[in-house]
Image (tube, rainbow, N blue to C red; front, side, top):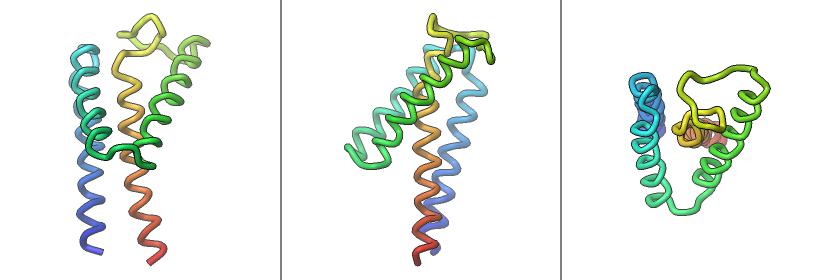
Length: 114
């Protein structure tokens, strides 16, 4: 149980770090994109193709498509955006957010099975 708590804290810290990066650097979209892309690639290279990385990739795709549709229909807009209507860093942020949420949920699922 202690190991699960440490892993849970680790993923919460990853999530908070991602939020902090976005809050501080969202106006510098290409620099933020580069940082998030590096983190994204490190996860892909470290984890290979596993269920969490597939979920991360799908989160990037579906989250970004949803954002593009929403900005196209003027549900909201971004002050700093690409021609698609979303910031360049948003697909990476979606993927990393889904990855962290998936990993945290796996800890809870495993604790319920025990």
